[in-house]
Length: 207
Image (tube, rainbow, N blue to C red; front, side, top):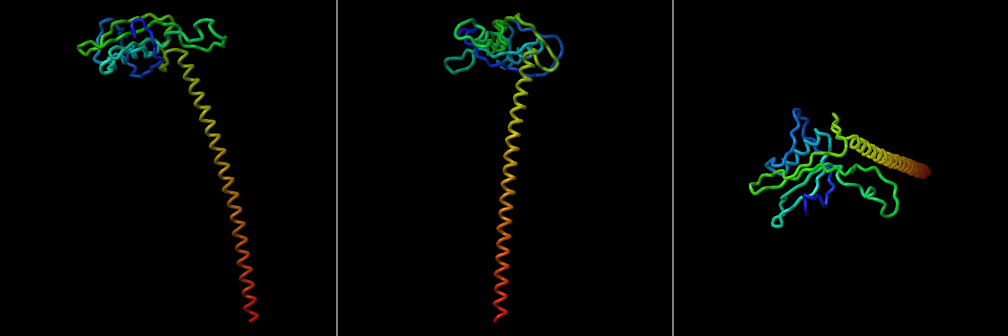
């Protein structure tokens, strides 16, 4: 897999809140070193958050010996294009809203023999507006998507509550019906016992 060319993208949007530190934004540069892949990732995520975009995990290259990650590419979540934007191939379908805009912003980090992770490629420019907001959403589209997800979750919870309510009412109705039936049976038994006692007393007096 050629990480430099950007083939074989893995669509794994990553949004991490690692604080809201102030101060100047430190920009990545080729030759920049990190102690680990995780440190490099956190740095780029924080850089993206403060600049106004969301990081997407791209490819990684593994060791054929022990499976360790040797290189990792991260980029803007608007990289690439959705299938319905590739052209008029196949049956026509209603286009769906897409966050992909063919953005090329990316960073490539590789592990050196020293164990350090070094930036070997950095593309800064985005082909879309960057939006930094106080609520933690990098773009208006991300905010709308989150609202839609929360709305769907709320509707799902409301349906569950409605179902549970119906089941509870049905259960209470069954209990009430069974209680009434049991009460009627008990009343019948009491009346039969009283009749037997009355008959027994009559026979006793005759003797």
